[in-house]
Length: 285
Image (cartoon, rainbow, N blue to C red; front, side):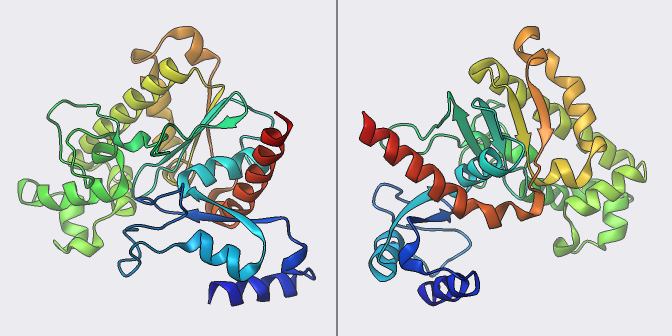
């Protein structure tokens, strides 16, 4: 199916697959990027240990690469979006979960043997804190990820029976999400305002840590940042100076994704471009 779709898209674009230098696969983790195997993607429960990279290389007859989807997001912003012209920045997905991609000194940071660098959502920001969906406690994502916040609101409904969220959702879990929380905040609901304040403070804390550790020129924030806007961004920017040094903070621009909801359309292309660039660089060494 994927091979057929690739052929169809190439045909519609007026090119031949064989004339392409490489393809890029943007894949959710957990995975084995070294071997190009999708081990246990949460959104594809029937995909277990699928050797997708080797399969696509064999059936397309061209070279290709396999990257973490958050890394691909960073690469997409680097080549086509808010990271253009910047060789030191961090991209954060900021959606149902929090993923990250790091570009340092003009290179994608992958880390050591597991190639799992950039899992920013799973750095601990609270000792013995809330349990994260990854199994750890106190993760950044457990306090600021969309799915985690929805779970928390549902759990806390009995404590806030008169809240905007309880009233508008009718207690139905499926109706509780970040959109409802934003609406509740704009309606000045006390419970929502308190939760929002905590979320923004935790975001400021995490971003402050990133500024001190990486000294990036930019931090590019995904979905929640551009979809909500100043209500989301302003409290975070206001809170960041408490968690990082003044000079690197003042030299770092915290901005929203430029590609926004189209970022997925650029992810695989950006991965392929980066793969070819790295390959060329390695051959010259």
